[in-house]
Amino acid sequence: MPENPVRSSMAFSFRKFSKRIIIFINVMTIVLFLLAGIIPYVNPLHFSWLGFAGLAFPYLLVLVAVFFVFWLITKPRYSLISLMAILLCWKQVGVTLRITKKPFDYRKTDQTFRVMTWNVKIFEGITKGSQASAEAKREIFSFIKATDPSVLCLQEFAQYDSSGLERDHLKKMAEYGYPYYFFSEDYSKASADYRSGVAIFSKTPILHQQRIQFTSNRESIIYVDVLNGTDTFRIFSTHLQSFHLNKNDYRNIDYLKNGMDVGKDESKYLLIKMNNAFRLRAQQAQQIKPLLDSCPYPEIICGDFNDVPNSYTYWHIRGDRRDAFMERGTGIGRTFISLAPTLRIDYILCDNRIKVDQFDVADRRWSDHLPLVADVRLEKK
Image 1 (cartoon, rainbow, N blue to C red):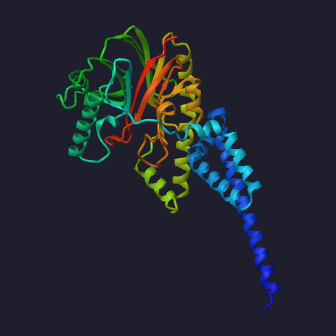
Image 2: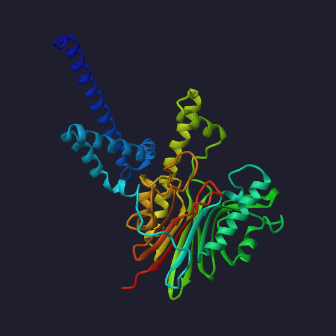
Image 3: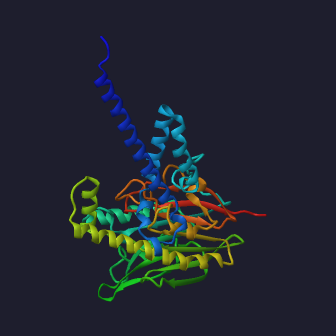
């Protein structure tokens, strides 16, 4: 039977329309991808809304890659658009996914210096209840002991001075082989005999120490100078401005992820809170960078930056330093276990004179952050 011309025309029109829709979606995806790609070069103090695109970068990368494969099969010349976008953002793509050559060996050697960083969430664990909290604390200390870092940086460290050994965490750390420490004590509650902040613990004496408070909030960056053999290292640690999400915020985010409606006021409040955090972290990054750049010793900065690798905060602090994850990491390096599977927000960044021999993000879920461990050594010239 001869082909129906009306049906043939309708099929042609549908294919043409579908093609235009796909091209439109492809172009919009690339535009958003490129916007996310310029974030490292744009100060959030001026364009803080770009930070939201930075959070979406891994997902946009996947979409652009899917379009690249799709056009490569159906219309190869169209795939060049996606390819060009990926190449233009190659620097940002490079910090999103890494493949390591070998697994982490937790046996220590005399040739390396082991550094560990962990946001321990004041040792309260991620499951409610005193028993679950006590178990989380035991596991955290057990892993620290087993890993045996030379220097340990803890964010959201809590100390209760008159509550017995179980809550006297400084004394507990000393018993675990870390008698030397520097504690920022950013927050305190006299009524509860409670202090919290960032702490650096060392197995060897601390030669020098200092706390620099941020101008944007009560938190700070601290550093200590320690000896490893004849080499002096300066270890920095910090906790940058968080989003301070509460239960309602997490609930609203879950609603949004599941396509459910969220009230206008709630959405606006959440966006404002996140927007302000992008700006404050930019200020803190600007305060940190001169401290690192003027350091007289090979430096290592460890901490919870509360920002992803495709961010102004990360790139401004990092500069030409080595990211331990990029040197020896694997996968996407997720360090925060809530909200999304792509959040790498904790880092170990090293002076470019320091070689990273091995690195690991340990899957120990006793906090909402995972611990990072790196074996490093100073390159001798």
